[in-house]
Image 1: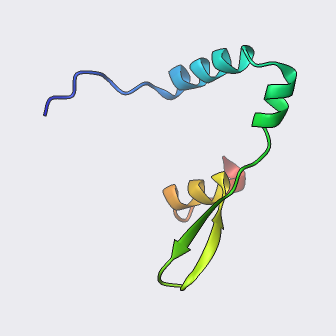
Image 2 (image 1 turned 135 degrees about the vertical axis):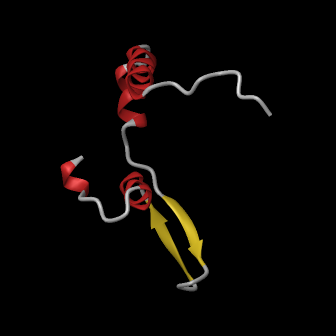
Length: 69
């Protein structure tokens, strides 16, 4: 299958997100800024764990220092 659209660059994504956020009311911004957690089952551990945005970043960047981001 031929890819017809190019992937947006990080700056384009950041600009689009800022544009979207500028349309939010202060109440909506407050509500959307609250961290959300996703519980996922890890078969290797046989338990549920909580996934956050920071955890996902660490999975995508193994061995990286999250404080240097």
